[in-house]
Image (cartoon, rainbow, N blue to C red; front, side):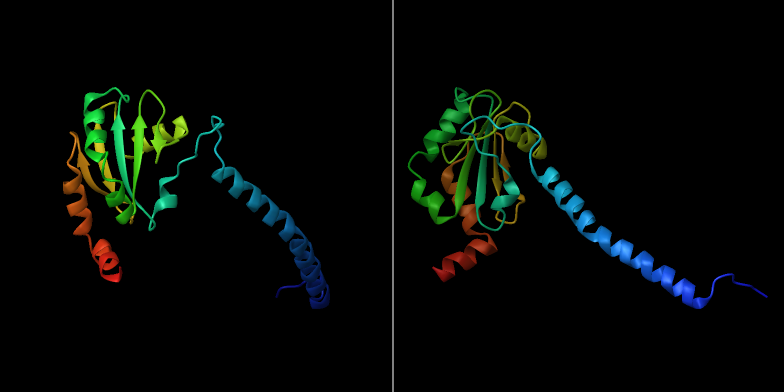
Length: 174
């Protein structure tokens, strides 16, 4: 037969005291959780003045992205690609398509605004890009839809976008 030295009343009192102590810890634990969440969101590397932090996930479900990777702005393929896009602003806007220029050497840009160099490295790793020229179309769902290693005609990109189910719905609602 088991013999308890404490009465049920003492056990209940101890449990109540324990629970009170635990509820006093909740604000402390919430503070720790908030601090750790903020640390995971903020970058550990400082941004260069006048550069944007670029998180591609922030564009998901809002924009399609056209990522143009090149060693530098002087790369012939990059210059040819930009020449092809030069008169296509209305087509880009109509399709919620943002142009992101990513260089190994030089200032990378999203819609003409400089991007933090550390973000460029991260995006290159995400898409497994070295120092070669490449064009990647990213859909609104955040997945790569097209990958080219040579300059691509804008009409080919626009036709591919226009064939996407989400774009079809957008065109019907306009």
